[in-house]
Image 1 (tube, helix red, strand yellow):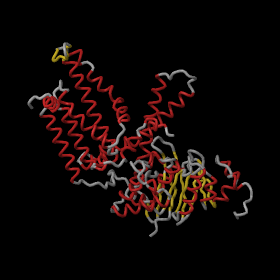
Image 2 (spheres, rainbow over the protein chains, first blue to last red; image 1 turned 135 degrees about the horizontal axis):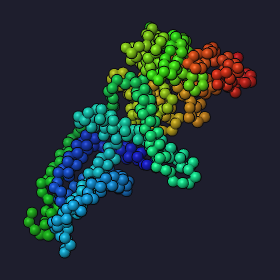
Image 3 (cartoon, helix red, strand yellow; image 1 turned 90 degrees about the vertical axis):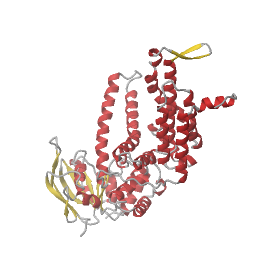
Image 4 (cartoon, rainbow over the protein chains, first blue to last red; image 1 turned 30 degrees about the horizontal axis):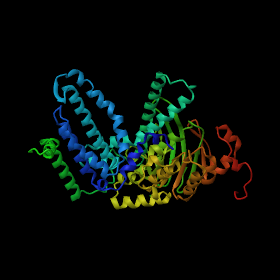
Length: 267
Length: 249
């Protein structure tokens, strides 16, 4: 077993090779739909929560139709959660103006916008992870390139993904050997600092050797990728339906409307 | 004109920090030759190999591949003629899937898609790894990685195969398979290695390097059997040559 297996980054690639209706969609279609999704979710005013709820359908649909294990995705979302928490955590302190109430408990604007940030985080990160899990990093890279993202950027992304395994393996091995010689004492901060330095220098050496191997096989600055994919009518339909849904959910508060419909109100 | 001949004349090279890694190296390898490059760590083997496809430019002397002197201008030609398999397959396999990695060289050479496809199939088949086509390279075993790295070079149909430590990190079975493959390749071969038993099996000639110079050359079995020579340059006489083998002259 490789050390990198414990980070289960590789599982993402296995998921990307599944064969489901969602996987069969062209990567470009999914990339465009997800980008529009993220853009629309981000465009809501800061206190929005209920009007955002219909958007949960998109990541949930990708995940369930793409047979992506929910627990796996949830773990990944949790890893990124501290970043969103840090962004939103001061809102309840700074904005104490009550804006709404649940029963007799007044809810301040700060708590509401904090909730909104966390919910948006869940939606966007969930959708992005679901996109990668049901497309595969390499197909996604090729799709981004064909959508006009500069090739340099795409190649960087693919390399980052490729060498993440190698570097994390190296880091884990280094840590293991340090722990084995530390007689059970916790590692000092200076040891970690030195390890990070070594890792950086080794990565630079590695970059040189990878470049050398690329040059030896005729690399001239342009990465040519084999990409057998085609954009058919199901893809067009998918993108159109997604955008239609996102835009209507942005313009009308579907959750509110649905609630009123159920309680016999008028839309 | 044949690209299969490698000729190195009075090659010297110093790294930017002033370390003289090569001090006047000369040799000639004929078409179909199989030559081992042996010597201790830091003898200059890897540096020498990097000159053969023009990655490093000599400070003095020259490298000829066929009739062409390798320079910055002819490096592209040299890289097509000289296929280089590096020591760490993780440096060489950088694409998302095995097939794409094998396709990397042919695509750079500007081959059309259908030819690239047949190159991938035949190169992977040649090393017995056709079943790994769609797998990501970083999840293969060391032996599989090595075989795929070799396939990625074979796909460019080079005339000359240059390998740096091809048997390092391999288990006995993978090493055995490697030796079988090496024996089946009709290319001119240059193999830098510490695996002296592999040299006995695969290489007809040997060059011994020490401190940036070639200190001995000749038929591999004779060179390796010369105990004093081997010990003087940080090597040793391989076990298989210590006593008579009836099959070997």
